[in-house]
Length: 492
Image (tube, rainbow, N blue to C red; front, side, top):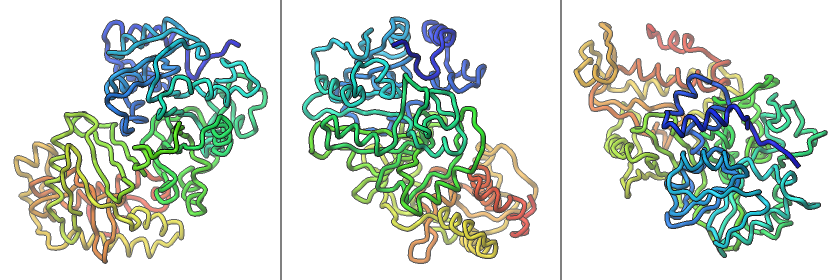
């Protein structure tokens, strides 16, 4: 049966070939063609789906349906041996140009001829097409069984795909494979080449194929450009309320953030997650990924600042550089953990290997507490709460118009002639998601922006609320930047 996978287009494929065969920068193509398919096939942010995953360095990986190599180049960095399978020679040529040290194989996905065994088999936006390339009455179950022969005894299959009942589809996103509204929710009427599944449906397929050990991860806002990787441990404790930066055509029927927050309170978010990354295991043993409870990825930055944050099952939190260029950034964060700001305490941190570690905090973040107040529509309580943050931040500060040192100007470039409140050293990153109340004390756990010189506290306060108002529609609709600064009698 002839079929075409997501966003594939002959003209676009030719453009992708030109980019990598000529050694051009894919970022330039994205700038010129700011459309979803260009981001999908060319953006380095696609790697965020697996940056954090604990691949064995000496491991062997089989990628089925590698597309234009958008994930392959990451796999070749993380593993010693990678085989990428695609159905066309033209795609395989692109993969060879894009990724180093990869073995490419032109093959139908149901006729793969390989004698070797693999630690990992990856299918990203491929499994949902199994009924188009695998002839069987039960193509999805039987294709999983087909893949077993390529797995080592303790190997895993990693499948990434959209959730048929993803909240975004209820909110007005088109179903990607059919390009229709509500098609997946309605059971894929007239859709004969691809289908995604709900969590329960996918679990049934996995079990019917003879697998009993598996783990679901929930990439948010989706598995194509994830910012967060959640698990069953925290999906309802740390619900995603951010902005979907890379979205296709949609109609806005309701606000996803608001509804997801409500779903989390009823412990339902896992069933309406937009995407799944499921790890299907061949044995009942424990796997390294069992130790991972939550990941937040910060790859949409300069190389020197790219890190990801992991919450571990042993009660620790780590920050790890995505790029070696970010090693110094991690070291600065450890230094920053030694300095408090006003009455706001910085949680102690230590360096282990190239990662920063600190204790996980069980308490709800101040951002979560603010959202809970907003859900109650209680303006008085809202301002009482941010008054407490203001008092803690400005405690024991001094007023000065001489804060603009050479170090300050090297970073911020401009100054004002006004007097502002300052501390001798500054923690810039005191956003509410990084702040907790522990034994009555405001405590921050993220020290990415520690500076050994004064920064106006009024600017730090501006940065905090500017970030939250921009990134969270719930806060934006409840209050405004002007209302907050008028409350504090600060001249913007």
